[in-house]
Length: 530
Image (tube, rainbow, N blue to C red; front, top):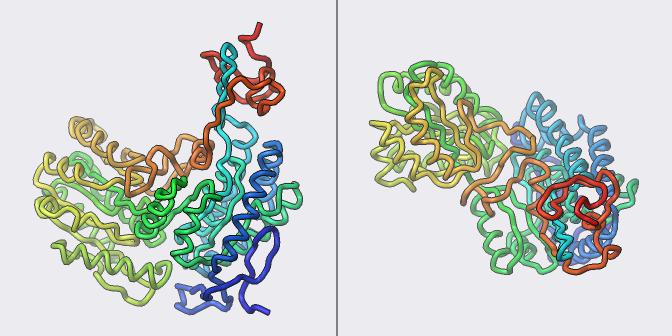
């Protein structure tokens, strides 16, 4: 009998065919937790893939209402175990119970699942189009089994079986093979228990949700390239994301990756002169909140070197220096942050608060570095390094023209911010710099930090490479986010009774908006039919 936690494959919890095992770590205490988690071998993956293919075929025959009911019932069940999930997430990540996990991330997790249910039911994401003159019709449909690789920093809202990728894939009619993150496996295990119960209650195939606790990198690359996989969703480091992207792309498989991001913030001179202390507060909160472990944390701050700019930099340094070391997600997270800060310092930046070393294996002091725009422009790639955690680099420029040159060299990012004066004195500079930021970020924020996303349909959380790819899509904002796991199918000349319900001439009342013969219409009979 195996002594490690079982995996969920084909509707059953069973011992894994493990190649090795691991234990999660409590980063606050620096101690290993008790449970032993398996890293599955390829035989587990093979069985999960075959079960997912069968589940995808069955899901395609079920009404969308069944999928919506599952997502809602699953959200309800997770809500009843919310305190337990928050406690587990805290123990394995060190993230604060309140407000971060209990008051922000858990509610967001439930909201995403319920938004996914509403989108599945409403179906506008399918963009149904009907040409009655030619009898050519098209709509979006699920791709088939979706593999989800979650990040370490959002154990709930981006979790393997709780997060936005999971909810989006299921809502689009795809089964999910989830690979838990090794820093927070307990959250996925408990959530998967509730998923199994919700599947049973709503009549979905029992392999709609499967869970593997660990996977060796070479098997991960083999998995995303497998022809049975419809698509993959990955959120995490650039090294791992690029490896999976290469493997999937070489095999012609669909993959969405969200990876490293610099997220530049530009403080224009008028804003600095007008409210420097408020800007220092904003930046400090953004860089040190949850120890800066957000994909949207500002890693680069660009401003003009003048007396107000120098005073602002000093104010930020004082705020950073007044804070003690913060708990990071684990030893590996701390090691990566130390390596990034050290690389930026060795390239020529000065550490003006904090340190380029850790105070313990899992703790790091808020760190502020500084470099001139001139030096950065000589070797930009040496400084444009993502330091994931509570560190950021201030770039002081001799002029607004130099600010533009620095911004023009920034790599693709998920977000960017630009702060301006309220009296209009920065308007000309804003007009020159904002287009540069728009070319380099999926979301550009005015007078606010890039951390903190509204969970609304209009949100864009994606950006130019290497922050994400493909850049057209978003991992936040239903129903748009579902299109990452869908494809368009055209039905040419089909008899009406053989068409999917959404493409028939007279769908039931309440059918979502459809584009019919050059006009959008909602429900009812085709207004163009004779």
